[in-house]
Length: 385
Image (cartoon, rainbow, N blue to C red):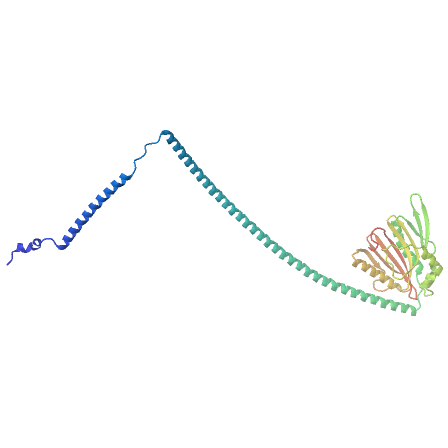
């Protein structure tokens, strides 16, 4: 049996293990290598310092000052260069900022221009809509006015036809039946009617007008500060002949023999252009005068047409003036529904601005009529007003 101590110290008596021996040998080699490397580095450093030349002796004071001046100049030049670079960068930044501001300003201008274009387009659209609306309204109003004008024209045509039919019936009835004795002769009625109008017309011009004692006419007293003159004018020289014509015992043409008509026609002056005259009427007698810018006159005409046609023509002449834009202050005729029969006096008057025209008409049994035309108006302005 073995000894316990011997068994316990068996491993110690055997020596170092193989691994420990390897580490021990490797560590020694590493230490030797480090020592050799240190020795090599020390030798290399000594050799390097041995090849460096010795430092030169310090320069004299003048050279030191010059060197310092050169160094300061170099530093100043460097400082100036840096300042120049900074200034250039600052200018560049300013230029970039100016470009940015210019771009912003251009953008603002483009925005304002675009807004202006939009507003102009909107205004044009609204204006176009308004113009279109006005045009449509004008078309509607024109259509309505045309319809009303057509209706009015048709009504007037109907009225004219009715008047012509009534006139024809009245003329036929008067030719077929005996006339009742007139309460007042046509000569007296014509004399009173013309005198009443002429009195107001001529008195406005400063004349005194009185009816003559006999005949059909006027007696004028023309007075001024130094002159007083009387002038007599007969519308019809033979009033009894006019009364016989009104009773169907003659013709109106018999009132003026051919030689008298020629003498009367040769003595007459042209009427003012604004005085309307029934077409084809023969001027038998005339009296006209002027007082400053005022023209006064009375004329007697013989027309180859019934009396109601003469009155109707003057009524339509007034219509034409109104359609041409002339505003009439008075338009009146004796009857709106029936023309004047033979032996009676038809009347028509119209006033506009400072002018007036009055017409008195009578007719005979032969389809002729005599009418007296009284006018007063300014000689200034267009004659066709």
